[in-house]
Length: 343
View 1: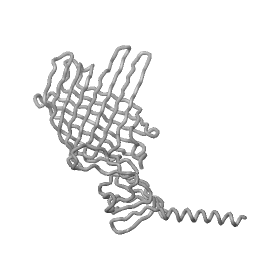
View 2 (view 1 turned 90 degrees about the vertical axis):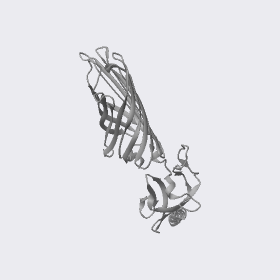
View 3 (view 1 turned 180 degrees about the vertical axis):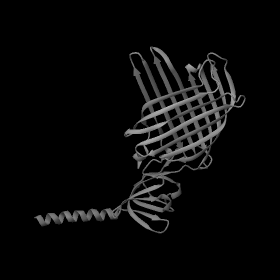
View 4 (view 1 turned 60 degrees about the vertical axis):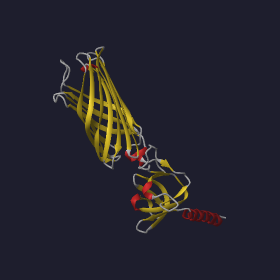
């Protein structure tokens, strides 16, 4: 009986092994080599294949001539760059089994397999901070902010907002908010045209409302989950309304820098964002706004951050200081997986 039991187990294992080989996916490389295994996912230009002889291996998608599978795959195809209308990434039928063949889909049009391409994934997060002191100090401060970025092919939309509110000894000591929106249209892999808008209020700078509409060109030096850096510049129209002096409007030169770097993956992210304006009518009328800091993960998509804000207004309302700065600690939540979570 014992011998028969071992024989049955051996037979079952053999059948499963044979079945696994019978249903293997096949990868044909551009150099003529052929690999078999189980296609897991292709994203960010890397194909992950599980094999019985080497475990999981990673293949550069540019080296893949074609692949076929005995099981359904979900293939995302890049948008047609000649199309006039804006459409989301084309998700082919989950019955698709061939890529790179005459009957299948061309490999250079594939953005991802069994995964959502990073260029079509919502990115960004929300964060907030609060602190309160009692006794002689009696201060309370609240901050909240959000960042959103979404891309479809050559098109990218970004939006940012923040709000700061504070009291000291029962009286309001801080109140300002800002909302911005940008649209980028990539002309090639690096250069893009941009259009932007921003509104801002700062009660303690006597600024009722500042409205900015701008355009220009930008350059994307790096754009990955680990490192991103872009700069842009162009003309802008600015309109300002104050409580203690006359409103004014002017044409200005506008520039911006956006930087993010996971210097220590899974541990520390460095970020810096700045925007500047210089009036073309009066060179003494210029301002600079920056947000810099470090962000560190806590658990899953939750993170903490230390942030330093510095704003400079070279031509403030009479009696007001030129600079405003603040240091804060925030807790936040990311809309998207942090870089290593999607590996």
